Amino acid sequence: MKKLNFILLLSLCSLYCSAQRRITLDLQQTISMANDSSLEAFRTKNMYLSGYWEYRTYKANRLPSLTLNMTPAQYNRDITKRYDSEQDLDVYRSQQSFYAYGNLAIRQNFDLTGGTFYLDTELGYMRSFGSNKYTQFTSVPVRLGYSQNLVGYNPFRWERKIEPLKYEKVKKEYIYNAEQVSEQATTYFFALAMAQAEYDLAKENAISTDTLYRIGMQRLKIASISRADLLTLKLDVVNARNTLQNATSSLKRAMFSLASFLNLEKNTEIKVKLPGRPQALTIPVDEALMAAQSNNPDFLELRQNVLEAEQKVDKTQKESRFNASINASVGFNQVAEKLGGAYQHPMQQEMVSVSVSIPLIDWGVRKGKYNMARNSLNVVKTSARQSEISIEEEVIMTVSDFNVQQSMVASAEEALDLSVLAYNETRQRFIIGKADINSLTLSLNRQQEAQRNYISALKNYWLYYYKIRKLTLHDFATGFSLSEKFDYDN
Image 1 (spheres, helix red, strand yellow):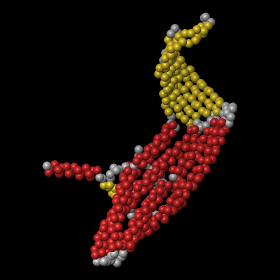
Image 2 (cartoon, one colour; image 1 turned 60 degrees about the vertical axis):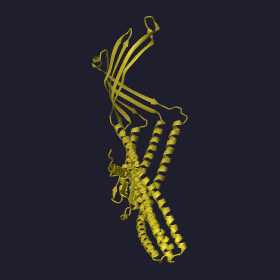
Image 3 (cartoon, rainbow, N blue to C red; image 1 turned 135 degrees about the horizontal axis):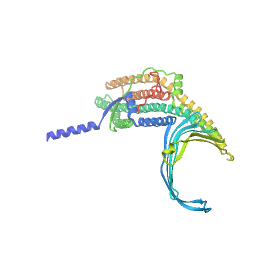
Image 4 (tube, rainbow, N blue to C red; image 1 turned 30 degrees about the vertical axis):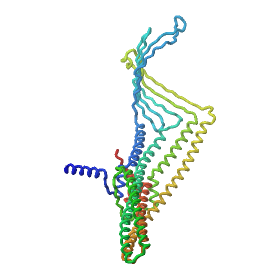
């Protein structure tokens, strides 16, 4: 029975240990996990893959395509009107026929002119049933042709301008979003760090106030403090316990939020380790602006919007005129009652067609579309310039805040060290009766405020740092461009 109880105890312990996973993370580990396994990182990767396959489709459209078109079987049975020359009148006759057709074509788009070259071969079979039975094979062994809009809109030329730019934007958006994930991870990390520090302070304060209350009870006996001061110490004990309960709840909430963001088990117990004082780094504003203008995907998107607006103007302008197209081909064809005969002694086949479409009266529809497109282009250009100014302003302000924040971290760290020393000294003076309760409470509040200010200073520093990386796609700590180091493993 004892052995069974021991086995059950071991099982319960193992279940509890597996259910309660404990990990300790620093800032870099948190960011690495966020970019590797968070749901936001998964969404970012799929957004990139969508743009990647769109670009692959564009590149594939620039290559020759091989297409097989078939009508394997077509059977017709109907009554049709025919002219009978012997009786000199129209008569209705029943007819039955079977038809099959196949075409194999290679096509190649020509970007410069917007036309299409094609090389194809055809084979057709037809058999008629009824009173007049016959069988025919028709073939086009080879045919070379070209089709072209003469004065129309050329989409291939615009695709050559826009699609590579879109893919470059997609690549930089992937890096941009990865840095945004780092920024979000930093926010969650320091939220937990703040909650963890508040919990530690609340726990220490609860123990300290209880100790001070016991000391106060002893000092009351010797009339060293008043009864009002003892009640104040008792109130501090109650408040410290309440504060500890609130800090415990806030710690669990912050821990749950970080675990959810990192896609960890919800009951994972996370302890964070604050980074030390950051290295001295000053970022020149001019260099940050140049990096942002070269790498920021928002600038590329603005250029893409302008090109797409210009494309629409070009399309509506050319469609407002008359349209003309040409289709020319040269090849061979033959018809015979047997399959082999359809490929013997082929005859030369030539075809040239020109089609023209001229709008005569449209009540200003085409002109209106062109004017709308032109005005939209002006709006897009103006909006693009406004957006560029906003992005540049954001870069300038973020870099300025970052350069100032380094000294604020050093000041906050010094203030924290001084507040801890001051609180410990005041506490010792209170124990020996040389400091009153108000001085002790004030010293404790200053220590807690200094702790919050230090964590906030660190948080702002690293948020500014990763925001600058996001806006410029440049790592100023190492001097490397993030976009040049782009490497995505499918």
